Image (cartoon, rainbow, N blue to C red):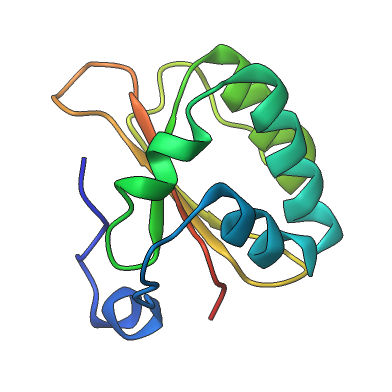
Length: 120
């Protein structure tokens, strides 16, 4: 899944960051207590942050989506995402960082989570 580009707002908001590293991602998320807690939890559940940082596109991290990630998003961002949801777009209430998940094909569970590195 590539960075969401369905609206010009998202294109305007995305920021290109050269040589993104896990340390730069962590620094970008530290400014928001809600997002830093999400990222800390994500790093405990998954070990792919370095790969996500290396392969980020236009300021968007492409993270693993599974039941644990869905629960982490629900608890941190105060939303309910049903297991059968094929598309979800939300923002952090504190910093307005956009997060987006979408199923790859009709009827499939969402497989990736895209989240802005630097909120708009």
